[in-house]
Image 1 (cartoon, rainbow, N blue to C red):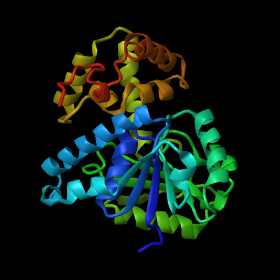
Image 2 (image 1 turned 90 degrees about the horizontal axis):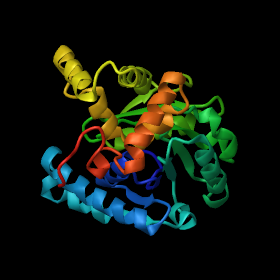
Image 3 (image 1 turned 90 degrees about the vertical axis):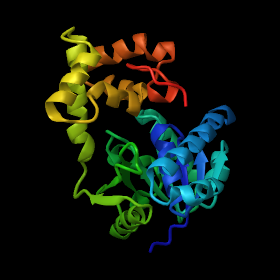
Length: 286
């Protein structure tokens, strides 16, 4: 058992909301922070939806545990209040280095000295942000997979400055919230999961940009040929097209072209994936 008792999650998007809810479901007091009350209204709906999903898919959740998790969740748009007593802050804000650095600079001033900072960044190295944290020995990456209750890995990756005791504590915490800790020996952009996943998704994006086939045909080929439950564009919709854009826009020419394609045809039209009911595919309202 660790000394971590109170947890703050920054960002209530697809994955941030899952991390916050899973942590609360595991018995921890959780504050979910986002930039304004309007965004938090959407977060409250996501948490309610997660409670229903857990009741349907997680053993024991329907016996009151899913609803109890909601009672352990506090929503806040006040960053100072949200981190005032946090033992651990898990950052799950947009995949934009400038935004993340600015956030950590604010956290360094607002969070108490005890607080550990963990980034859930999908592709950025913790070393890219560590200089802005004000506590390099208490900063590392803790990366979750989408649908955390089912795909329950938590990749733990430090920087050369991370205190081994902090690394061990966060790895133990991951186990305490039902994750399987995956300890990574040295920094690698994309960790293990995304080092495998991102090239796969990028290849699908290039097929679309080059006009080789439409998303449905690409997905169908992958599902039939490999037995996988989802194709790459279905995965893009789950991850969210904003995240897909933020990752792709920093890539090579083909990936930048894919970023422009999804921005013009989807993001600018409010089609962000499953979260908005439409992306590459349409999803019925729940």
